[in-house]
Image (cartoon, rainbow, N blue to C red; front, side, top):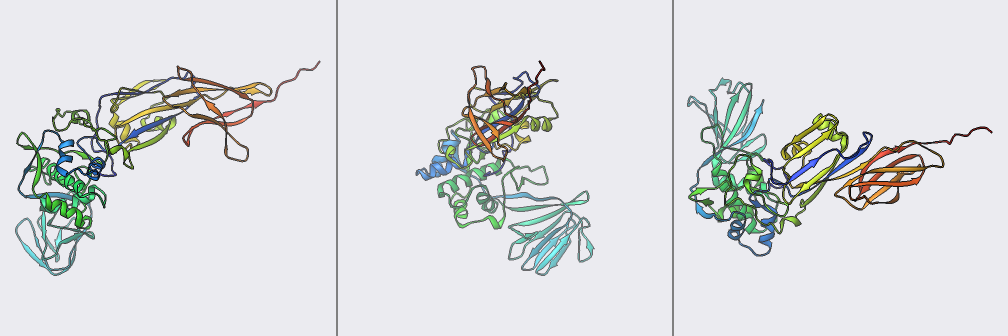
Amino acid sequence: MNHRPFRLLAPLCAASVIGAVAPSALARTVVLVRGSGWGNGVGMSQWGAEGYAAHGAAYRTILAHYYPHTTITTAADRPLRVLLEQSAYRVRIRSTVPFLIVDDLGRKIHRPAGSIVFDSRLEAADKPLAAPVRIEPGAQPLTLDGRGYRGTLTVARQGGTLTVIDTLPLELYLRGVVPSEIPEHWMPAAYAAQAVAARSYALATLKPGRAFDLYADNRSQIYGGIAAETPATNAAVADTTGQVLSYDGQIIVAYYDSNSGGRTAPVQDVFPGLSPEPYLVSVSDPYGAAAPNGRWLVPLTDEKLSQQFGFAIDDARAMHVGPGIASSVELLGPGGSRTLTPTEFAQAFGLRSLHYAFSVLSLDAPAPVRTGKALVLAGYLRDIGHIELQRLLPGGGWQHLRAVRARPDGRFVETLRAVAGEYRLAVDGIAGPVVTAVVRLASHTRP
């Protein structure tokens, strides 16, 4: 799950609220979403596992930390069915040696080395085939649209489109998963821990009553086929052959992600409807915070929030109560309020995890002033410091005017010499809301 969005997220343990705070409907607001980690936060943190491995921990020690109360047992190899293509109109299957096609009626067609293209008619040698059609490799693996896969490919018709499923042994499947889930040049112990976790996850999530067991993407585990394989990860798979994580005699769903953000989350806090499990609890992740994706920042304007959710938002206030992951997001506007799950909010803006909290910069549109009078700029700040007030120079570029400090209630008022133009707040290189100051000539009365 490295460098990919979280799989499934749900209401968690701490409250996060976005709501109205400033009285002016003309205020401009930017919400800074400050987050950590990448993924669902449950089970093993991959960057954490690499950190432990770099500090000398063996893979069994790593697994015992992230999946407490489990034991490592052995499971027999078995075939898995992995969905490679869905809703395809045409697929090309190729082999460098002769191969075999078998349709659903048992009819066999021996093909020389080369390619065959299937569309919804499912024909071979100008003969219609009964779906599904199984393509069995010869002495060399098959390729699907240029990508090599071990095992047998099955082409099925679904409406007017095709699906392609790769059926192959578990251990060969893992050779395409482990290097797809974590980067190259990692420690052998991290690769071995990933192999055991991936093997456990695959076996615990099989779907015998369905057409396939696993997706080839982050809906299950990323499976890259032959092109993904490396000597180091193949060795990790081989060195841990058959090893799985078990609790009370059952193979566990060994959730994992790229980086937990410093501490993993209990499974019931992330996946709705799942019961607490003693092996999927919150544990420390001391090395995950140092990962490249350990901290992130996403700025959102009030316009973007309103457009995304179809809900008018005056101004925004963020509040994060207690440690951990957000539990709810509430949008407040002139027409009322709307409550979102953290999943809805995070997925709407492509957030990397549910480890996030909000900071707010809000700047009111100033009233027009006369020359010679003071320009008053006011606004609201929440959970943020080191704010600059800036003015756009006539020739371009933003000029620092002063640092802004809010009162305990979050409001601030800054009095400046009246100069027409655009003003904004900024923090850490992030541009905040922009407002325009209008300065009119002072009126004169005749004697």
